[in-house]
Length: 389
Image (tube, rainbow, N blue to C red; front, side, top):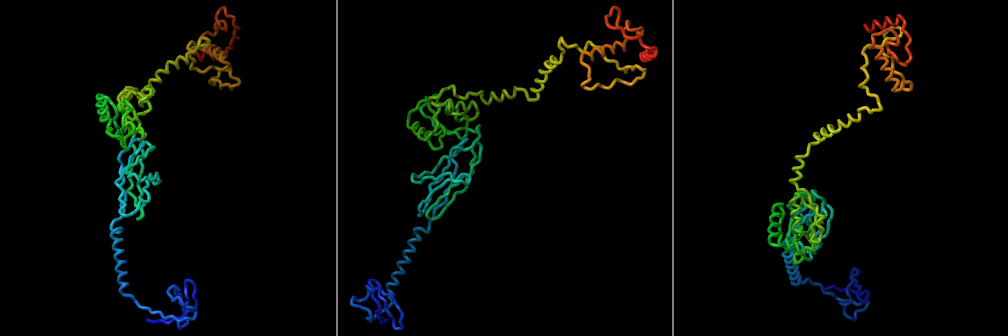
């Protein structure tokens, strides 16, 4: 196809060409002959190159097949999280090698209870991590999130519960330099408390037991901040029936710092022998009764109420011969003193119990210094006799 175009303007890079119907076409000036100026007419032949088009389509299809076979047949897999070991305050988590397929790793993060706990470096091929500082006998939820160039993948959530203080199954001991008899006894004690033995220091090793600080494993335990204790620590755990502190069992620690108790068996025996709370209260009440009786007994300076005669059940006769019962109690401000009240009670008891009516001398007795009581009237004597009869 031949097309005739008129050159309108020529610049350094682009030339403006005009068609017969006055349309503008921008054309690269480098493709025009060098002697072209404004107003020149150029003929351009346009045709389709079938062979080149077919070759290009075949090359593109081959490229798509290569991309599919390389990147489309496999994809990264979600990590599988497991618990290797758990103690009272720590958890050791592990997972298989990360399968990225053809993708690139962005990050691998560990989450605890829905919050990000940290990023795990993958340049060294780490497949386990230790989480410390946990609470005793508490449940935690962990999961991993893998971020790659092909997308994000999350592991299943793993629920782990830390052990109680009496659960010693999470202890993993690595023995160091020990005498042969001591090593045998240590193995027996570890087996009895339900702990485990690891010949080499690992990420799940909780304690390194030895009597001398030397050796490659001893150095590795120090680098990993693993407690290095004496064999007596295992014996203390067995004796107490619970995990004990390591402060007093270090190689250079003072033995007086050790928490030496009576053991679980002795404590149970004491609990059985000790009295129950009800029995203890009854014993204390019996013990306090004599003390209260002693405090309630009168002192020599106070008169005893035992020497006084018992009050008469008969009502006291009034002066006019009518029985009106006992007089009402006096107000607190007009109440008689204790001594006056006692003397009044004595006089009342004497006057009621004595059958004589001959006068004051009969009541007071011969030789008495007290003032004689005035003689009663016949009416008073008669009424008094009637009451006594």
